[in-house]
Image (tube, rainbow, N blue to C red; front, side, top):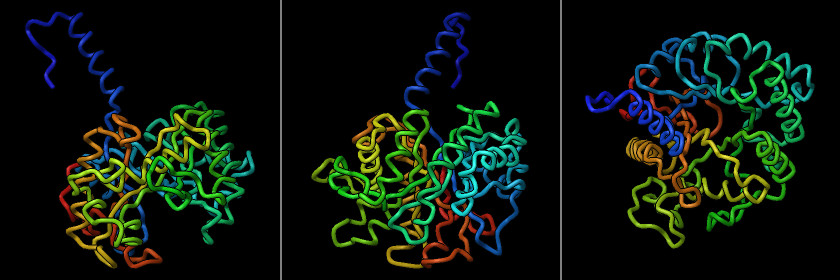
Length: 344
């Protein structure tokens, strides 16, 4: 936008600039990020990956462990970074000294040259999940310790400590305003939400309309999951993404965090490997999601609130364990070609 105009004096130009900055702050214009998994034996190097992100205007990145090679490739870029503390690491960081050492060794050396934004202390930890239930008692003390360690190094506010959860911890999700945490999730999620409310930090949430649709295709229209249904449903929602996100907002509010923002730390649609996993569906989902998020319309429960969103994932990962669809979430192929020609 050209601000220079012959009829604008310096003072009026300054006022206009301040107004524009204020409007950007109010609307919360957000960019789209990507999640960088590395479960593949054919993936580009970290440097190639970061350069690919730069050339395509991707301004957010989530990595699932502190990785010095990635951090070195990121130096001097404007890419905002979320770094995970992996679940197996959580118990160690319940010790305050260990948490401080983790921050000192993995974050402090790069903090002046890498734009760290969030530390995700644990991912999808839930008592109802047999793979992550063992970590439930470690999340909250590790989260508190990492937050305090960031403060000790003068990084509080600049880098925010939080955790990443997902829709499985919810119940009563329809209508979305009835969303609440499952009883066996409250032990962890209530103190987490209240801690985030006290610190002013957001909650990260992995939101996947694909899995909700796949689990109940007789009740959920594909058009509703893909943002292509033009008409609102009986409770005023035009897409499943907003409904899932608002269900999480409702649960967070009931847990004592009415003002805790939610960052969508993962969302995506697979292009192969299972039911409704096609290139066409994935392309439709990603393109419509990006348009929706960039439109800054928010959700019915949070109108006008921007939705900071990270696409899962950067690449197809041929060694990703579990369900076959997990190998096909990439928005880029391992040869660095774009699968969907997305406009970030």
